[in-house]
Image 1 (tube, rainbow, N blue to C red):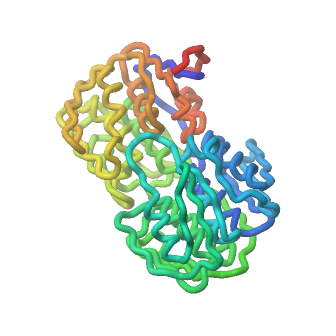
Image 2: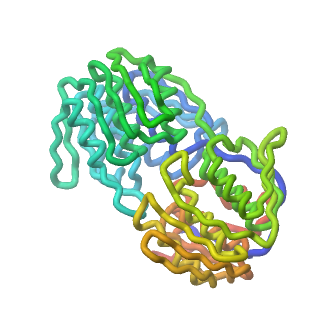
Amino acid sequence: MDKLIIEGGNRLIGTTHASGAKNAVLPLMAATLLAPGEHTLTNVPDLKDIETFKKLLKFMGCKVRTNKKKKTVVIDSTNVKKFEAPYELVKTMRASILVLGPLVARFKKARVSLPGGCAIGARPINLHLMGLKLMGAEIKIEHGYIDITAEKLHGAQIHFDQPTVTGTENLMLAAVYAVGTTTLENAAMEPEIVELAKALEKMGAKVTGAGTDTIKITGNGELKTFKHKVISDRIEAGTLMIASAITRGNVLIEDCPTEHLAPLIAKLREAGTIIKEEEGGTRVIGDWPVLSTDIKTHPHPGFPTDMQAQMMTMMCVANGLSVITENIFENRYMHVAELKRMGAKIKIDGRNAIVKGVGRLSGAQLMATDLRASASLVLAGLVADGRTEISRIYHLDRGYERLEEKLKALGANIKRVKTSEKF
């Protein structure tokens, strides 16, 4: 098991880049199940979650070739023979549920373990199943598995009680083979949804409205293979922006998807950060004191819940009082206890976190609890006095491509070390 050791206090200066988006790659990998032949994805990051999804596809019978140097993954889904996603492969990654839609659509059956992933709150899949049932699928849940059969899916009008990213993606993947038109109302509007729609259109599907709250998919019984370049990861880019801001840095971020980061950029500017577009990327210049600002998470295009923990770290060293409201997940404040170990002053009141800036944090031994919490602790270590040790960073590796190497290249005193500790 690895851990990170950080000696805080260094300014980050230089040029870095945002890797491909994990949350775009995974549904695209699931989409390869829809049509036999070789599908090619480029700008694919080297991440644990993507490795897990590759194992899942191989288990089903797909052939997977990876060129990490060129960041390319080629998936041949011609000989899919197993229509199951077993617990052993699903337990660490919630996105495994995305194979449900394409398996039912192409093969008329699927058996998928109930998903795992970060323990940040209840993320029920009832909306996925509700939609598939309306499309004509028969569903049975027992012994921790979802068993679905569908001789013929048909179009349906499906209204989500609340926006769900994976639910929207799963039903889009299923609807491309359904007879007629499927309408998804109150659909998720994230950029990753738009990317999936683009790939499905390349395959021959008809998809309209992606990026809005109403998406229509007209079924097509004959789909073809696709090639697609993955968009840059807006959450990694946002984390790098905060890293520069919080360390009084001056960092140029290449491939920074600023068009997907408007709410974060607005809040960083309120906090005193200078952000400007230049030829080749986005420059982020931090200044002290950091100014306090209030944050409320909302579904896209609102402030992303996946940036809440990182922004809280910044508010911990701000000048003044800020209120952070988490409207998406009910259990996404697990990083608070670790930040308090570093001297942060945070009070939790329901969905609100009241943060009183302390100007400086103190290095401490910390334990990561989930993916984005891990990033928030890395940011805290960069700005803390003294030495910070972060254990259980396998969470970080699920969604950030060698983050410590990018930070070290910018001047951070950070290293990854092996440890014999077991938790």
